[in-house]
Image 1 (cartoon, rainbow, N blue to C red):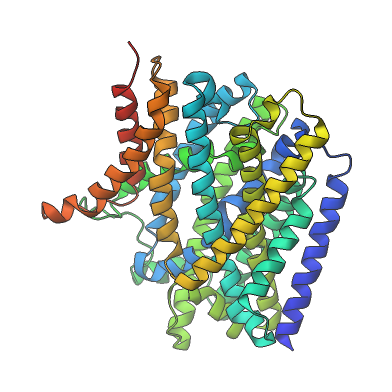
Image 2 (tube, helix red, strand yellow; image 1 turned 90 degrees about the vertical axis):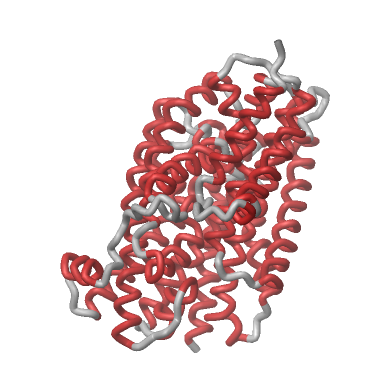
Length: 480
C-alpha cells in the first residue's frame, strides 16, 4: 500500500515536470535548446544549479560518510568555495567576451581544431560516466526500497525514467532545465531540512545539543592534520578548489546554464549566490549524516554507508516523512541526468559534428540532427546504468572523484596553458599529450608509491597532478 502511494507521487511529480516543459518550450528553436536564447534569470540559474551540483550522490552518499569520515568532507566544500571565485572572475569573463555557445570553442580559437575536439571528447566521456553513475545510485535506491515490492524490474524503472527525461528535455533544452532544476532543488532542500528537523525532534535534541553530542563522539571533526593521509586538510581544500574549476568552470553542462544568463554581471552574481548557498547546504547534509548516526545508535540500527539514509527514512520514520524523502530523492535523480543529456547533445552537435558551422544547413536540418543525438545519448545512458547495476559497486562518491581526476585533468591543463601562457602549440600533438597525462597519473597513483614503499597516499589532488602533467606536456610541444 505504501509503495503504491510512493509510485503515485512519482507519477504526479513527473506530470508536473511535463507541464513545466510544455510552457517553457513554446516557440523553442536550436538556440533555445543550447543556451535558452540567453534570457535566463541569474537567480533561477543559481538556485537550479544547486540541485545539479548536489545530485543523488550528495543526497544519499554524503550523509552516509559521516560515521567513518566524520565532517572531513567539509574541507573539500571549503575548497569548492574558493574555486567558484576563479570560475566567476577568470573563466566567465572569457566565455562572455568570446560569445561562446560551447566553452570548448575557446580551445579551437586558442590552439586549433585537434585541441578543440580533444577537450570536447574528454568532457563527453567524463560527463557520461559521472552522470550515469549518479543516475544509477538514485534509481537503485528507489528500486530496492520502493519498486521491488511492486514487482517492477530495475531495467523497466531505468527505461521509464529515461523516457520521462527525454519527454521534458527534447524540445526546450536549457530553457526548460533552468525551470525544472529550480523546482527540483526546492524539493531536495525541503526533504533535507524536514528530515534533519524531524530526527532532531525525535531524539529530543536542539541544534546546539546535536552539535555538542556529535563533538563529544568525535564526529564533528572537520580538519585532518596528517600530511600522509588522503584527507589531509591542505590536499582536500586545494583539491576541492580545482575540482570546482574543472567540474564547474570547464564543464559544458554547468557553464551552458551560466552563459544562458543575458549579461556577465548576472552570471557572476549567480555564481557568488550559488557558491555561498552550496557551503551551507553541504554542511546541512553532513549534519543530517550526524543525526542519522545518532538515531541509528539510539535504535540499534547497524546499516551503514549509502544505505543508511534510505533505510531510516523509509523504514523507521512516519509515512509523511518517507514521502518527503521520496520526493527529495527523485528531485536529486532528475538533475543528475536531464542537464547532462542536454549538455552532451549540445557538445556533440556543436563541437564534434560542427552543426553551427554548416552554413548550408537549415534550422530544421540542425534540429533533426540534434534530436537524433539526444536519443542516442539517452540510449547510452540506459546501457551504462544497466552496466553499473551488474557491477553493483557501493562506493559511488569515491569512483566519481577518481573519474574527475582522470578525465578533467587534461581539460584543466589545456585551459590553464591557454590562459596562463601566450604560446601556441603543435595542435596535432595535443590529443597524444592529453591521453598520456591520465595514463602517467594512473601509474603514479597506483604503482609508484607501492614500488618505492611510500606512506604518502594520493587522493583528491590527482586532478592537480593530471592537469600539471598535461600543462608540462603542452609546454614541450609549444611552437617557437
